[in-house]
Length: 141
Image 1: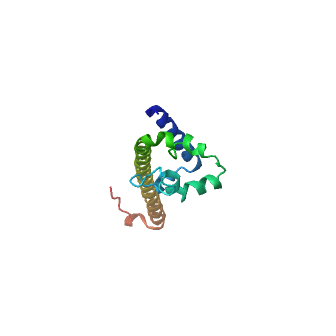
Image 2: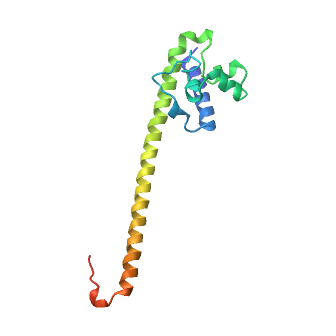
Image 3: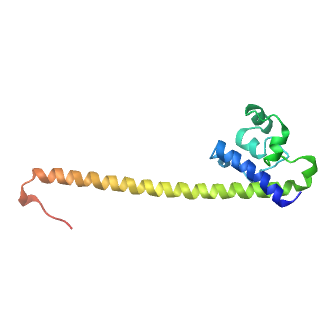
């Protein structure tokens, strides 16, 4: 089996998971990834158990897991490590992109909050200024 075929299978699995659950990778530890284990494979870590996931989502045929790179079959046992490397890299990439996206969202929220506080303060100052005689107003710049 060549690397292109492995990458294509894993990409099919990535596309499937991204469409079903955009944050699935947050529940998968790439250090524990083991495609020969029903609980430490991608679906096992993300959803508890590979076989239970298949059953609950109507993917009864084992070939579905093979075609999506979720499991390794006997003919491709020698390539199990390659699957793990590709899956692990993809999970790490998604985690890093997610971390950067969350940081950007926090920055944007902080800016919105600061803008709102400034607008509220300006309203208070304007409201207060209307009720004070002019001689009490001092412009601070």
